[in-house]
Image: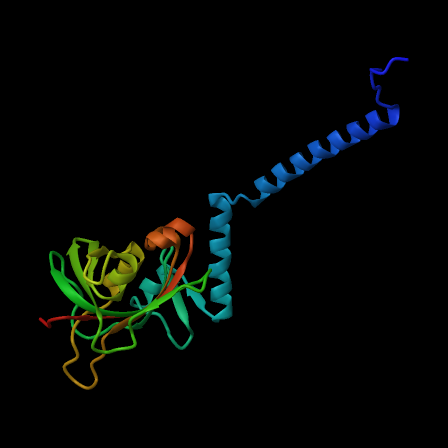
Length: 230
């Protein structure tokens, strides 16, 4: 009797193995397909951003006007109609609540502004603000050269959040510079004088590093006034 007889698998066992191997292959393909579907392209993120902006505009009852109409009516928006102008070059939506007292920033001028703001993300629960204390504004250094404005936050909440400390100079994103050609920045001298106030919807391309990294749009309410009046 041969005690070392070679084991021969049955046809049923071979069929079961084939079925099992096929299931393994199908599971691998399904996992790969799912992983591909979970990956978001830049285009996917931009579409989500556009949807978030449109949803916000609809929810808040915002009336969007063209840049041509904005200029036609004297570079103003009607707050009672909740008008925001869509700025073609930047994609920023802007509402001028108050043009402000004083004068615009002049060509060749550099000045320091006191800035108070509320910021919240339209696609997350992130929010930053410094409007809780009238004695603790952010400081923004602004320069104008022709039609080009550059600015940095030099002190305050913005530096603490997006810089390396409360006194670390931090570049101001382009979207926050959009209002400057259309507002005055001064200091109130009479009871009727008011400082400039704007509302903005800023897409990621015009926002800070977090906005551009995550493709998130942000909403702002901002006031501007000069540190020292002219």
